[in-house]
Image (tube, rainbow, N blue to C red; front, side, top):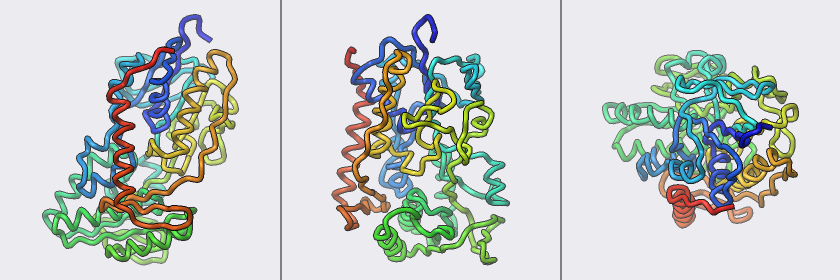
Length: 382
């Protein structure tokens, strides 16, 4: 470890890192030098993006401002993205020309989903310049207003490609928005061969299918295999008229991960132990989509994410202090909350799934309280 204050470097302002920073407000690690490398200081939370698309919230209402929290904790913000990691030399390269490579004692990676254009083109030939990826959320938010403008001018045929919660929520929110615009546009959900919400309870899948049908959203359990101007191709040979596919991009490791020198799993993500720590380089931690996690990774109030953030807030200082690390606490049975775009949530009480306006209001209040803690940040002394 360094002779000066050990340097803990956070790569990305993903939901686990946001929760880690919130926990540090309760117990500030004053014996560490802290740096955050991320392109945005107000990341968008996935819980609210559908409400923005549906026209219920402003985009600013969907952001989690971190300025006050970083200032209170004394965290240095470097605006930029990681472009390379040398786990053996403990160096991070980035795209901010004002700073040299960043050395670290401990690095934690929560950079979210990476969308590599060439990889997306390999998955969906013809995708380059013809699709709107829904991740990263900030990039999607920059381009979505152009879709609204197009729908204001003429009828558009939109297809949401994906089967996860983001794809379902976006299809429902887009349908609401098209109705608000008075557009006679169509929305289709192309879910793939595994079907809608694969891996989720069958009751949720059934209720989601029912709601999509009620809202006039056609769900096609076929795989999109290529994109062309004005149409997409399905694996059965059928073609679907489509002005713009909104693609729920698969979770992919960033291109620089494979060159990091750290051990990777069979999907190309960092291989970690029960502490979220690299099995080959103990000074490296990875979490969320940096591990290919499929849970609601953009959502800072997800039970699992919250507990990962709590654990990380302990383990990063503990490693440099040569103290024992702790595994994440086991999250209780997760409550499933699906935003239906109409100020309701489809959620479960045990095995029963129902639509609830009250659940949506409660979630809004919970998010506002969490964000207020960060906006009005005051750190307790250790």
